[in-house]
Amino acid sequence: MRLLDGELKDKSVWEKAGIELPGFDREVMKAETAKCPQWVHFGAGNIFRAFPAALQQKLLNEGVEKTGIIVAEGYDYEIVKKAYRPQDDLSLLVTLKANGTIEKTVIGSLAQSLTVDRHDEADWNRLKEIFASKSLQMVSFTITEKGYSLTGMDGNYRGDVAADFEAGPDKADSYIGKLAALCYHRYANGRLPLALVSMDNCSHNGDKLYAAVHAYAEAWTKNGLVDEGFLAYIESPENVSFPWSMIDKITPRPDDSVKKMLEEVGFTDTESIVTSKNTYVAPFVNAEEAEYLVIEDAFPNGRPALEKSGVMFTTRETVEKVERMKVCTCLNPLHTTLAVYGCLLGYTKISEEMKDQDLVKLVEIIGYKEGLPVVTDPGILSPKKFIDEVLQIRVPNPFMPDTPQRIACDTSQKLSIRFGETIKEYAARPELQVSDLKFIPMVQAGWCRYLLGVDDEGNTFTVSPDPMYESLAKQLEGVKIGEACDVHKVLEPILSNAKIFGVNLYEVGLGETVEGIFTELTAGPGAVRATLKKHLAEA
Ligand SMILES: NC(=O)c1ccc[n+]([C@@H]2O[C@H](COP(=O)([O-])OP(=O)(O)OC[C@H]3O[C@@H](n4cnc5c(N)ncnc54)[C@H](O)[C@@H]3O)[C@@H](O)[C@H]2O)c1
Ligand SMILES: O=P(O)(O)OC[C@@H](O)[C@@H](O)[C@H](O)[C@H](O)CO
Image (cartoon, rainbow, N blue to C red; front, side, top):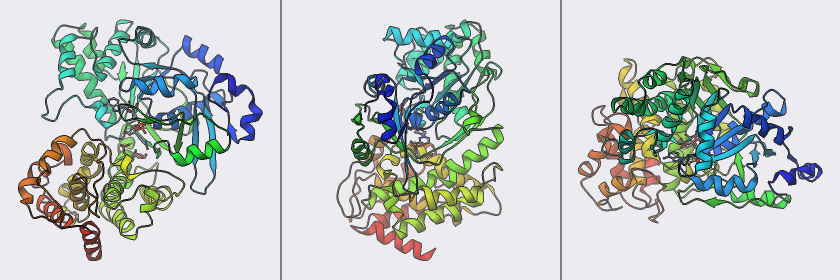
């Protein structure tokens, strides 16, 4: 069995292997999408295939929608060339349930895959055609937090961004520059309305996307490179909206154990690759069963009926509460904690970490004791039930091949949201004291210890990719496990960086605490475990 339209025709073979097929005619769907494109998704990574693409498949299966999704990859063209087009844009979703059962579904809801590459004339022209279509309702994004950033380490616009501000929409070649150019094309073709929906794990993700696109519209207006009405078009939610969203479905990288299981039932399209831009991709994706997608209902040109496949549409206020609950307290901070300490303690599987009583206690304290007090109940999901499900069912799921090394990617970009928001709440609320936070500093110190790339036994490991790694490693280069050093001098520039932590840790009274824990964690081999045990015993 291979992922090719022709191969899907012999349904009995797939049925025998327990693999569900799309329940609609893909050729008809592709023709409808070519005529009336409604949904483009930027970011052809694993979560897209496991979640948004599967949601649209449900609607196509039930006849609720007639068009598919066009996926557009603007950062890592290899994904499209190696893991989409050779498989006719089909993928296999493997759902690994906590009770040990497995669901296998061929996802056929993609009508087309495109590179957002203005040097590829056919793809770029097709994108322009799509953005000029009246039928286009939404463009969604899963491009990682760093995908929205226009600035470098020094806080100034990056070179490619600054060059695009001068070059204008006809030549823009940076990621968001190309998106802004496509929006300008839509504006020039009748000021057509559109929703740009970020589905990334960043707080207020809609605002992040708005700020990035707006920066281009503003610069181009100032430089006289676009019609004056363009800025107002981007600024007016009746024309272009930037709904906020919260997305949740743990989707690890394609795993060898799943590959093996698929090969055993006769499925042969299992070749995983790591692209030169470090995306882990295969024709199949593996994910958990639990999934939550909550989106602000602000779609000026209408939207697919995604509520019929389980998406919750609500107000911006409610999305904010749900997103803070997940991203700032009840899931992602716990993941980051397990990522940092998992790498230090030699783990390669998240579910194994949930058998380690020290780590379980650590995430329970960070979640229930330090995080939950600042959560406002969003009403549509219960924070207590949510965190219970995360810590008792989802993260310990032994069938999920998730790794601390995956989650540790880009940690410098995530710490401010994962922990900084809680610290700010403790500083702002009279009934809470920042000094009561004992274990969030443990993660902050643990991350600095992690950046040394040496585990608790003294073995070196590869630090997961992070856009700030190079400069952070340089800052930490004098630190050696088991050797005394001037910890304040080394850590002060890092811990005072509010861009990393959301706050200057010294100004909120946590800088010295983190320095102290870091000193303990670097005392020698075994110090990570000993420090954890010591602090947990005092909790
Ligand atoms: N995987 C999950 O469990 C999960 C769950 C919820 C939300 N998310 C969100 O989705 C994002 C992507 O996750 P994934 O599993 O698809 O990861 P992935 O590694 O499979 O894919 C990453 C995607 O982001 C793109 N990308 C990477 N760096 C970029 C940059 N600088 N500019 C523009 N695009 C860039 C890649 O080209 C690719 O399309 C996460 O960062 C997170 O915000 C992921
Ligand atoms: O995806 P990131 O990089 O924001 O964070 C890593 C994980 O915590 C994350 O991918 C989770 O798996 C996801 O947020 C679960 O919904």
